Image (cartoon, rainbow over all chains, first blue to last red; front, side, top):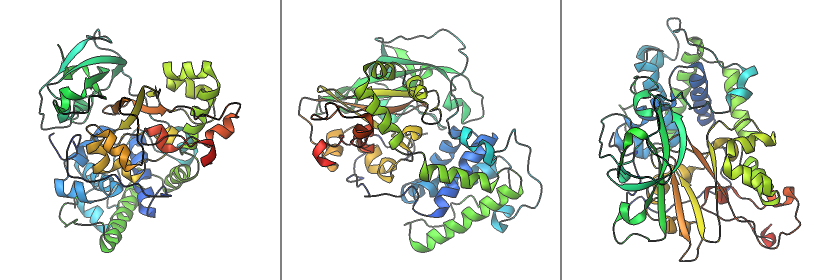
Length: 218
Length: 208
């Protein structure tokens, strides 16, 4: 979706300000949010792209003004409610009123170590790969109202395939509950002038990781 | 209570406590429903506070600086190379190391959310997840470097990697001069987190 989360190339946000000696969490609840997200993901309650999509659907003003883990918490509430893991009444009361749904598994302390490694996103290929390193491609001009990982600044642009990362689950499908729909994934590199026009820094090159459905031969 | 019915102008004190209460309510409900175990949450938090941080990446970089065969393996398949070190948990299947050279400087960003190589660098800093960094890194990386006090030669190629899928990137910075004969351990102390994101350079021997 064409939301404020898709920030690449926007002006006006100011300087990057780094915090010195930044702690892992700025308040204990931030850690709880991160850990809950991990635990619900491990349990199979939803996928990472459902979390991303839920954040993208937050009102733009909310997205831009609340902190990172606060955004996670709001997205988690959306997924809990939309997927029927709890009711609005229960979240409001802070207590469960009925038993939970069955989930494939549960994160317990003995398996936390193993759960900290990311899952594999590789999936069996559904067809031959269309592109190889060195091929020129044009990204599609698409504007789906739902989750996509093709940023606006890199749509309808010509680039060169640099790497192929194998076949991965396709976020656009996963986020809308249409299954893994595995697709080939490539690193595609663009000259700065292709993206930002004739005044762009000529020493700059930018790459995205693009799923095959985002690409046409060029 | 999907959370959009309040004003969220600022992350001020009263809102923080409201957030805290909401998060606690969520955790209680998910626990009572049987989905999560709070003691597992404690263990996750502890791991990120004490074990999973940029030192993991620093050790990888220092090894690449001293062991040419490892460096080659790292650049060919970072997932496999890092796993072979055995000093940390598996990094998932999708790690790619990109090498800085005198001609090319690499920088990592995620413009769409905040994808970051957690296993080797720990939790991302707030600035990495912020709008200023996510918006500018792909268009004005030299301006971003300037914010970090870094100036590169005008003709150095800048390559920005936008992490738009599940591939995660780590920058292999250049080894500082004057470190000949240093041990991996000592070299690792020079490898800053920001040098592995591309918004910084490793420390020089005199800086440590």
